[in-house]
Amino acid sequence: MSRNTINVDKEPSPTLPERRQFLQTLSLPALLTLLPSSAFAANNKTLITKPIPSSGEQLPVIGMGTWITFNVGADTATRNARTEVLKTFFDLGGGMVDSSPMYGSAEEVMGYALKRLNQSQGVKSQKSMFSTTKVWTPFDGEEQIGDSYRLWGLDRFDLYQIHNLMNWQDHLQRLQQLKQAGKIRYVGITTSHGRRHADLEQIMKTQPIDFIQLTYNVRYREVEKRLLPLAQEKGIAVIANRPLDGGRLFDQFANKPLPAWAGEIGCTNWSQFFLKFVVSHPGITCAIPATSQVAHMQENMGAGRGRLPDQAMRALMLTHLQNV
Amino acid sequence: MSELLQFSLLDMTPYDQQSWFNLLANYHQAVWPVQLLALVFTLAMLSLIFMSSKLPPVFKSAETHVTRHQSVRLVLALLGVSWLWCGAVFHMQHFANLNWAAPWFGWVFLLQGAALLLAAILLKNAAWVGLSSWRGRLAMVIFWMGLLVYPFSGLLEGRAFMQLEWFPLLPAPVVLVSFALMMLLSSRWRHGLIIIPILWAIVSAAFATTLGLLEFYFMVGVVILWLLHFVKL
Image (cartoon, rainbow over all chains, first blue to last red; front, side, top):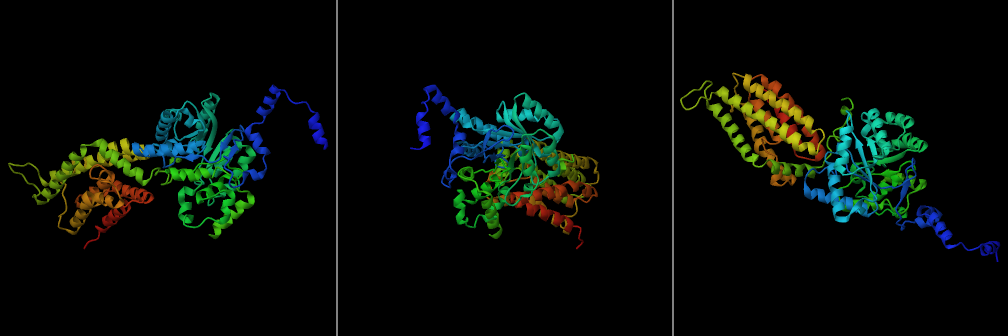
């Protein structure tokens, strides 16, 4: 009989309240860290989350953008079709939903879809939502911010960002005030298409922000050099926009077969291949692909489950794409 | 403003082809029965153009007090109203739902509409060039392109009838008709009055490229025809 066994046997059994307390301390995330790596094999469908550095709150790595896809104006049939896309996103465990006043009617359509889901399913449909919008005006942002709350039908946003650094000094001050007042949980700043990276870097170094949003995908990786390492150093969460390069990646690769080894990281289609590459970078917290199709949403959300490629696999993925 | 200038064409096209088509259908539904008025408006313009070409420069009779000059000025005024409608109603009230830049476009259209109305008031000796001349024939080609060919070309893109773009209710046909009328106009004012249509044709062609629309070919084509009409045959 081993020593350990003897020790265990000699320990008194915990009383019922103590046992409950012990079990409560073993939260699910804590238990998951105890599992062997094989538990995250390709056929494992566990939702992948990453922590927001400023709070530790876990966020599903695949979010949802609304650029173009939710800007459908007043057309009821199309609005209802987008509501189905949003429902699919929530059903599959989606978290971050991102929009902006710059996206035409997207915020209004989002409000419509949320209201419709609430009417049909109750508040449960929104339970996992991590609502994200932006302020985008060269003028005072008060009116625009008020409009966004009204259009979404929300009292509080999880994340409010300054779109493309526009008038960021004034807006950042206002957003920080809203955060203190409890109307916003996190504050961020965005850029896209590689614009104004030097300015963004300076803001990251000097301002108390929780999130940044930038363009990152297999084709556009310039941010790996400075911005992503800086975000890790400063404890800033990073949202990757255009993770599928606005759909252009499919133009190039859609008719090519997936490599056989893609199954090792749980990829059954190119969308998952591209998205898993993006969210597996240690500096990226979440990616926000946009789609107008339920089937595409299902594909995208598949990238947020199973296991992520490690460094060696990421290198293999890039090499493969260069050789295709 | 410098921050606004950093935005690319892609930023100004936050919608796809289907949303554009749906917007057109909803717009037509919302403004009904203005289409009937638009038809009368178009027929009136056609009558004035063809009538004025047959009138002597100063034609007065007991039946009508319309002179050739007056009919040309009336056509310019009607064209001005078309631009004003597109600016105030289409861009500002409908297109603004899809495109944040639409109100700015609306102001440009209002400016062009005001300029045309001003021309209608001030051009005392307005006249068309002969419809049988090289310039006149070219203008007529563009004119029918704006009134019929462009609207019906939408069917090739898979649009429903309600999603077609008709003069004088939507920017593209209004711009095409404007090119035609400025080509017909014999006054030097036409060189000033064509500036905004040329700019819009370029912007519109760029939008059409991002959305994959045939409009691109019409806009590029009309600018080429405009340059071509300076060639003396």
